[in-house]
Image 1 (tube, one colour):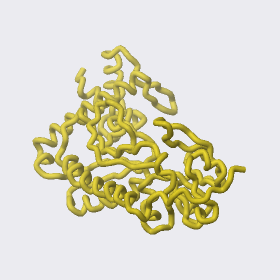
Image 2 (cartoon, one colour; image 1 turned 30 degrees about the horizontal axis):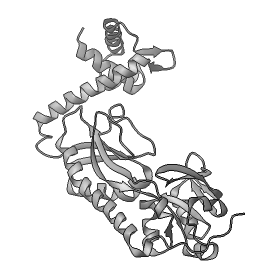
Image 3 (cartoon, rainbow, N blue to C red; image 1 turned 180 degrees about the horizontal axis):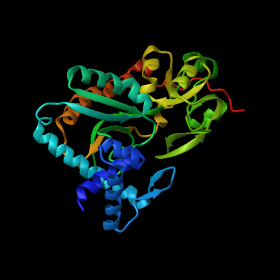
Image 4 (spheres, one colour; image 1 turned 135 degrees about the horizontal axis):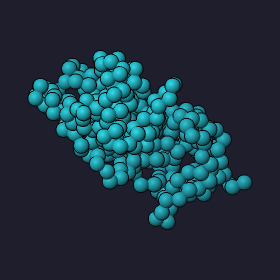
Amino acid sequence: MDRFQGISAFVAVARAGGFSSAARQLGDPLATVSRRVADLEAELKVRLFHRSTRRVELTEQGRTFYAACRRLLDDLRDAEESISGEYRAPKGDLTVTAPVGFGQQHLQPVCLEFLRAYPDINLRLLLLDRVINLLEEHIDVALRISELPDSSLIARPLGHIRMMVCASPGYLATHGTPSHPLELGAHDCIAWSALGAASSWWFRANDRDQQYPVQVRFATTIAESAVAAAEEGLGFAQITSYQAEHALTSGRLQRVLADFECRPTPVSLVYSTSRLVPLKLRAFLDFTAPRLEDRLANIERCLSNPRVRHPGSGRSRPAQ
C-alpha cells in the first residue's frame, strides 16, 4: 500500500470525525478512503478507530498515532512552504492561544498591531483558560502564565505577574489594614473563580507558600467582577497584577500584604521545536515579544509607584 495515502486518509477521518466527511474533503470515493485506512490498520496490526453506525472514534493507539501523523504532515507542509515562498515573505495563517483575561487586555491589542503591520498574515486567537496541546490542536504559539515543565516546547520569556490583595481606600479607612494574612479571617473578602470560590488564599510566609482562610462575602466567576466589587468597597480581593493595574494607578484600589505575596509567575510565549519555524511565526514572535515585555515591565513600574504601595499597618478590625 501507499503509506502516505493511508496516513493522509487516516488523519482526514480523525479530523473530520467520519469516513464520509473525510471522503468529501479529500475528493475521493468513500470506498477508497475506507480501504486505505483498513490497509493501514492491517499493516500496523492495530485498530485505529472504534466504528459504529453513528460515530467513529479514535482508539487509544489511534490517538497516539494521530498526534505523530499530524506532526509528520505539518513538517511536510512546512518543507513545501519553505521552497514555495512563505519563508521568503511573512504570509499565511497563524493560530495563537492565551488565557482569557491577559489575552483580552494585553495580547489582543498587540495582535491587532501585528496584523496591521503584516497584511498577508491571518491570525486566529483562541482565548481559553485551559492548557492546550499545541501539536494535537494545531496551535502555532501559546502564551502561558505558569512555571513551564521540561518539554519539547521552546519558551520565550516575557516577564512575570503577581497575585496581590487589594481593597478600596474607603474600606481600609473604615475597617483597617491587616498586617498578616491571618487577619483576613476577620474581614470581608471577594473570591473569584470559574471553578467555584475558594475559602482560602495562598501567601508566602516563613519562607514557604501556604494557604490562609478567608471570609468570603461575595463570590463571582470572573476577575473583572471581583475588581469592581473591591472598588465599591465590599472588601479584599486577591487578583493578578495586570488585573489590578488600572485601579491601583487611579487610586481606586490599594495593595496590602505585599510582604506576604507568593513569588511572581513567569509569562512566556511557547512554540514547538518539532517543526521548521516559518517566517510568519518568526515575525509574530519578534513583533509581539518586545511589546508584551514592555507591557509587563510597565505593570511592575506601576507596582513600584509610591501611590500604589502597601498603605501601612493602619487599624485592623478585631477578630470576631
